[in-house]
Image (cartoon, rainbow, N blue to C red; front, side, top):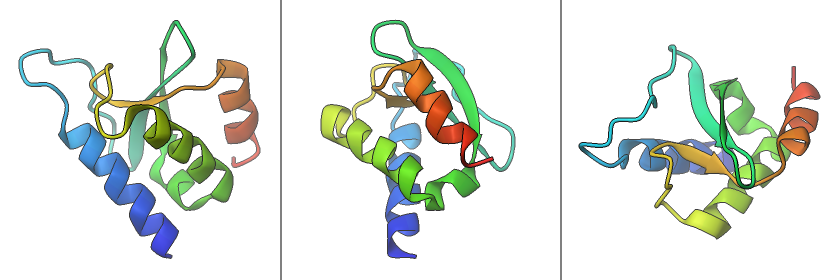
Length: 94
């Protein structure tokens, strides 16, 4: 449970800290989280917040935290991994 709380709080802090005046599309439907995925070209995905409790998704969040801390260039949560890796991980969670 603590990992879920930590993952949720980190995601909330990142999204809440989006840069004012450079309003990117960071809003997501209730129950979902917008993330940007990719190494050079970033693509936006909506993921259910239930993924925050999954160890494999938490590993992606840890990678994001290592690379960006809480300063994400896209104005939302950025996950620095190849898109196919992200799809592979999340497809096993559905």
